[in-house]
Image 1: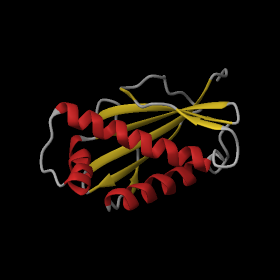
Image 2: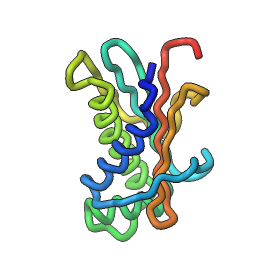
Image 3: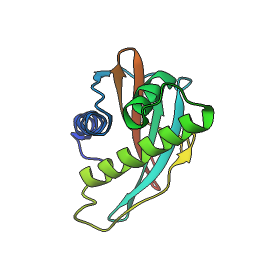
Length: 146
């Protein structure tokens, strides 16, 4: 079960990680549609509770991310998917920490391209706008009935 204030914490965690990692400063926005952007998901386990963290990013947001990290002004499909996989890895680690994984037994899986779990009413989502480009994150408890 996710804490009651988790959405606010998620927004702050994602925004802070992107600012530290790639000097990207975004504004919280309403969700983007599932059709937009590339996706990667990663499993987070904290004290026996499992969560799926799914990250979706538009190509423009990935270009900004890559430009900050590797001084690139273009990318191919493989590089874009690797970037969103790495973003899922970083954000999954940050979310693991927020959920207490630095103090309790925890595990961070490997990122997988595309959505690997259906989001439902338990999913906590946030999205950030970076000058018209978007990065969205959803965290879903898994392994229990909705």
